[in-house]
Image 1: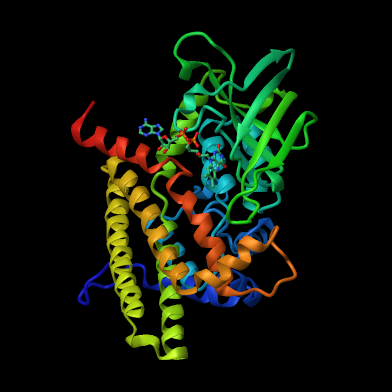
Image 2: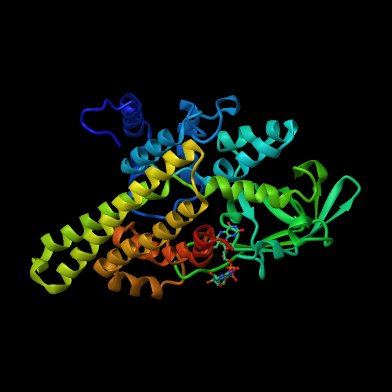
Length: 398
Ligand SMILES: Cc1cc2nc3c(=O)[nH]c(=O)nc-3n(C[C@H](O)[C@H](O)[C@H](O)COP(=O)(O)OP(=O)(O)OC[C@H]3O[C@@H](n4cnc5c(N)ncnc54)[C@H](O)[C@@H]3O)c2cc1C
């Protein structure tokens, strides 16, 4: 970021981050992250409490609401240094998604009720947007919210709801009107997950991790005070969220750390069986070098996007290009790990009927879970085809 002749304005900040990550993140938590196990609410919570105690609970929020007020460059450094030290990422649904929406569109009562519990990690959120038949074309959603006195009554189904099984609250887009453009009839509601009429059913996935769910809503009564913005303003809130979250400083540092791990794995394999001369070793090494070059490229692209965002000149196509590139790169990198460690472990995984908590943690086996999970990277958060559409629209108009 700086040449040798320039002084680094962030030098003291970097050092503070390094020291905090070294001293405050518990060793067993770092081991957990390093072994690529699936991070659940428990692990996220431990780290969030440490950050909260330090005043760093919300790197992306303003100071007035308990955030750090850091600029994007500082947020990037935070992500880079904590990823390098194997600290967990922060859980994004509260801090990154609904928190900023409540800050912008919410009432004072909503801010007072919801924001403090996102900061200290005592309340956990999930996102109820997608429905069967409304994913990329989200505005086609059908879950209805009918006004009944001072409540809305919700009926419908959400799908692919990550972490619904461990969430206290769901922010969800519902249809409050069928008049006019389909976007105009959508509203954003905050729904306590213990409300009668909500049923969460796990969706089994190829990675054997419990990640996504179906959420059924049958006559679910939600107080009108949980409406964010005006009725019919849900699409605007959803777009506000997407616009801010397209540029995530977290992805590239995590990819860089994964590439390092894969290099360690490959080196260990070479040292273990002198297979370094075999063609497959050299093929894997070449793939790894290409992927590492890709990570460096992604880092440069992200840093320039951060500069542009700070100057207000960032084009939508650039953050879509980053999402597209990083999703595909993550699959390439984990694909190398799979080819190093995979077949034996994959066979064990396929034979298993579920995740066996009693099994010893085994980095190579966890990398196989991760490999299978990463197949979803090019779908979740907007598919690669949808990103390409955004890029094409930006480049060619239409
Ligand atoms: C692991 C995972 C976690 C998720 N977590 C959540 C969550 O927490 N909350 C939530 O609300 N949703 C979540 N999702 C849902 C995710 O946002 C959707 O899967 C995604 O938006 C795609 O929608 P879809 O699955 O309905 O596929 P569709 O939109 O039906 O797409 C099917 C295929 O058609 C292509 N396609 C669609 N439209 C176009 C187009 N206009 N041009 C070219 N190609 C097109 C797509 O790229 C895709 O290949 C998650 C998904 C996954 C896999």
